[in-house]
Image 1 (cartoon, helix red, strand yellow):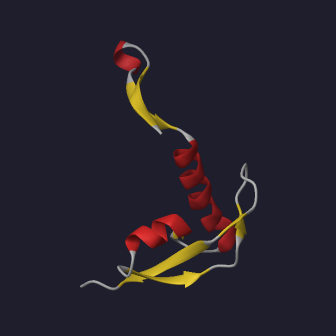
Image 2 (tube, rainbow, N blue to C red):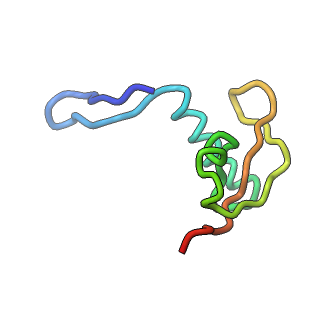
Length: 80
């Protein structure tokens, strides 16, 4: 992932590019197809630990990636 400024003078803006950003965008866009509001990848779920309540989705094909990916629908938080 690379973070930086692009553009010139008044048109300058910050942006982020890279495979991780593309993957996150595609997971987010899978919400529409899945009929969910908030999906997270298996890696994000593993890092969140027991802080979130989830429903496990069937393995999902992510556009532009090879194979199937485990996604989770976030349905709540275990912290108060």
